[in-house]
View 1 (cartoon, helix red, strand yellow):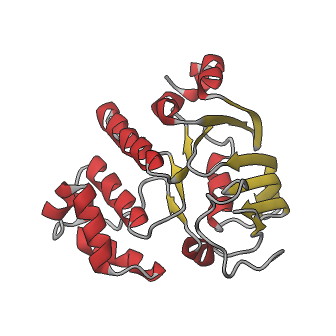
View 2 (cartoon, rainbow, N blue to C red; view 1 turned 135 degrees about the horizontal axis):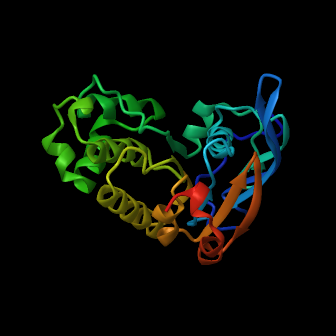
Length: 247
């Protein structure tokens, strides 16, 4: 680890450092390098859309940011501090929360039991339930229902509730639209936009760019393990090829 991270504050509004930053980051699986010098910045309160086709490196980038995949070159910084080598559990306690591709709920557990799993970060089940049921009343009605028996949208609400109940500073979303009907995708991104308006910083990897661009404050296009372009969502949108990013 390049720098100590204890006593790092979850609040970064008092200074101008990005809440999350990758600088020349390289990473891989065994001898195969999949990220080749990634530069990416998430400012406090921003929604950054990480776009690109499958295999471009989006999920690996989120794994770096969540502490699952180690950095082999460059720097991963959180609130201005280098956190190379910091594990996922520590990053979670520092306010980094991930909703992985496929939502990551436990299908054979009830809604309430799924929320209980998130108490490992130090938040009580009572507080988790209060946040979840206030934001998504349908989950309160489903609290004793197995998560796997709920709709895809309801499962995504549950995944978001587990994340929000831990009061994160940074929310990492991987392919939020996967497996959801277009109407539900729009509803979920409306919710994400509302979270950003409340001050949450969000990095979202999404293959179907036009699902997330309406709520994004900036966008980055990723191809073959590199961020090849960053900019205003409208500018990125005008250059997108629907042949590989989807309509």
